[in-house]
Image (tube, rainbow over all chains, first blue to last red):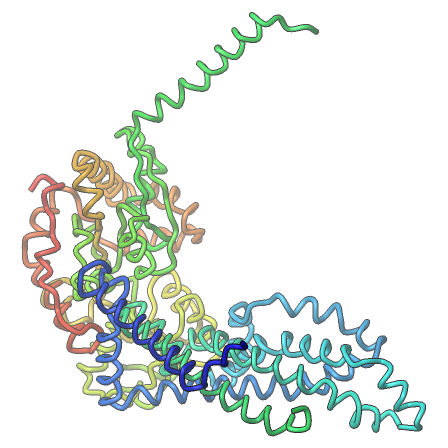
Length: 255
Length: 329
């Protein structure tokens, strides 16, 4: 007899129960004195801080400021990385020419760009966008190149034998064939963009989740630090959800 | 060449004995981890080490570098650092959270003219800052100086755009015109002052509590990790003797001290001398009066001021963290 697969509601219930259990254990450890709240605040303190900041009207401002920086940097990076990656993925010569530059850029952490970005863009929002851009551009480019190179060459040759032009091969074979992998890569890059925004908000920021965490750290307000971390996770989950909706819509033909 | 078994054993025994001799000598010396940086508050600890005062006292100091006071205090909290000099703002932030892991055991110095607000061409007074961009490292003593000076000048929070700029970036930001004014401490403060056409608008002597209690916005305090001090009280006492011997060198022979410090700070000789002479170096004999006198009232008022400017949630009772037992008081 084959066991009946668990229902969606049962799976959701299990996930919710594990979250609640985790929070209860965390809270109990703090209240019992097993964990010093200076090192790790209880969830109730984090929630109280969140409510206080919501009351003061500063919480949403911080989330929106970071979200704007992430989206601007991420969109700029993908707008360049997608066409460039497809071109590099399909042209051996172009790839040979660009590979050394990409190999140089790829290992650089976003934080290493802070001194130069300050000189180039000054203490402006553009400087913060540029940090997110530089931290996400090279990884996004690598994902797109790999997605493009993974297209079955037989499909390309078949299209060419049937008389398809270069543009038609690109539009009808390469782009649809690599889109799924590009989109799943971009989901990872979007998460990476949120780590870059922490570096971006180290300098000349007055708001944002990165600023919130760094300022909280300076004053040992660990509940503010944890709140900032939780908000980053929630925002990434939300953007991931939106991304999945877009993915389902764009790749409807694949299902 | 053949080596006989007996020869081999004899040589091994001799080598072991030779190696064990210095180890034995080292075992007599007691070690501690010090949290430092190139900031002037650490000069006595560095000189005590470089001039051999600590060695004479049988103490081996492991010098750990930290970029900020908060990072240094985090290391104290986690047990990685035993003794550290720190800006009081970080210590007060922890004290306001009820952290009992450390005690304040001494006040190294008082600096009033090595930190301040400097403005570019055309800005001649604090009043002229209205509508301008001012760069300062948030959560620093210079930040508190800015908040205090602007508050006393009658500015509202958004009258001046106060930007969070890390201390090392401030000179370049001023030079390139990205900010109209900067609040910094030495060595960036000296570097900005050397730029052409700049005006010093205020230094720490303009801070409200300096006028009443001779307390600067971020005075340095020497802290010890409580668990370490309880286990090694004699070591902490001996450490302080060597430490304040170095303070006397700074006060009585600044040229000699400045020469030794250049290895730590990499400052040009002239700036190094100005930095040494820019502070009043306290002696061990002065500590009892400082730790139990009006200066402490000033630190308490500083905690209250941090609450007023919303830097910390509540003011700790500073005297509860003072431990004058190691200075013989």
